[in-house]
Length: 166
Ligand SMILES: [Zn+2]
Image (tube, rainbow, N blue to C red; front, side, top):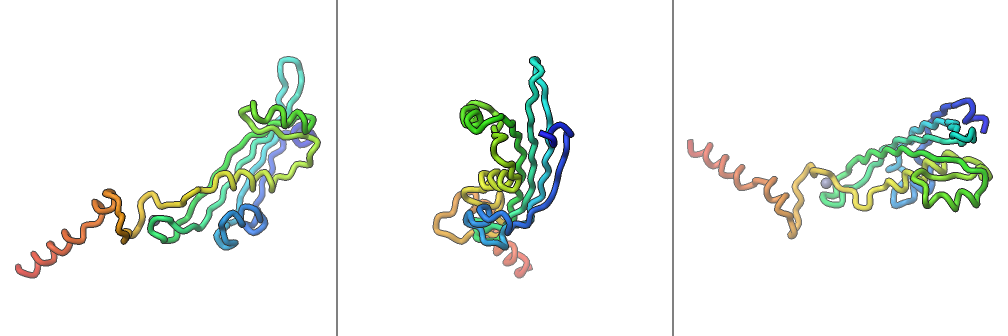
């Protein structure tokens, strides 16, 4: 691989709308931000002087989602960081992908960075997006103790009453 031999690093940005599968995984197009990515190719030589090409891929994006607890908008930063190893054939890639810690790609297939970035972002999507701490108290009949502790409506009322009688 020429790119790997040069140790070349590439970077770029994809508009959210160009990642169609990602934008369609339950997201509307305006929820998908621009995606920044960086790719670095590397050629590693083992003890038997055999060279293997590797790809280090990073991508960052930010989604606008609705919190499933308080239904307020929330931003969900995504950050993926993956490493791929290239093998000569598709058959080898299939054979080794399950066992190897890194993802294995075949040199028989044209390298599609957009697709790789998209795959990783989709896998990183939250199943149930929720604020770590919701900005508003949630009005439901099934409040968790966590919520009732944080909301102190009566304490506030008591405080106001005290001030009025002064
Ligand atoms: Zn929330």
